[in-house]
Amino acid sequence: MSDTELKARILESARAYFFEHGFSKTTMEEFANSMGMSKKTIYKFFPGKEDIVREITREKLQSVHQGCLDCQFDKTIDFMQRIRNVTSFISGEMRTLKPQYYIDLQRTMPDLWKEVDEFRSQRIYEDFSAMIREGVEIGVFRKDINIDVLVLMYGNAMQTVINPETLSKLPLNASQAYDAIVDIIFGGVFTQNAKEKYVTQTKEIEHTEETA
Image (tube, rainbow, N blue to C red; front, side, top):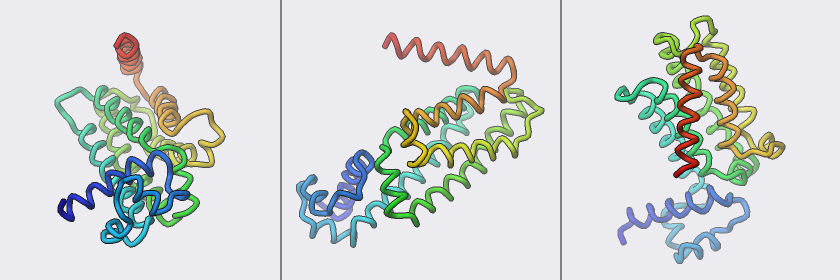
């Protein structure tokens, strides 16, 4: 196996293991054993466990951002479906990150948590505001809304609710909390026609999932 393949295998295993279980209580020896690999091989590519965590976290940020852009600017489908695709994609990505990962990141690697938080804030401001402006222009969102205030509300909700301390007090995981935020915010800014279409599409999707 080449060095490129070995490193890719380590990262793939780290994503599966750390995103699911967290990383603070896992030693490099335990992680290596779970892969059937020696610590020496892992250290060849990563000086320590924190370096692996940084790489998979930054990689996740970029992949989520690119996935959102792909959904948001797919002009082959209508705007309402693009909204649903973006929010469904984000919700799905959040399901891959279990609460312990958020907790470990915030408590043991505050510098990286800050990086995640700042990245999230920037992407919310740029990407979410662009989507809202487009929605207003084509009549999906009400024209009387203050876009800057709406984006600020969405950003604050994401930062306040999608964090380990808040999630520990809610009977929800990150994905469920995000879905609740989206329903509340979008429910208040849709035009009447758009709201009716959104509700209809939601019922159709729920019916399809129930009968699948």
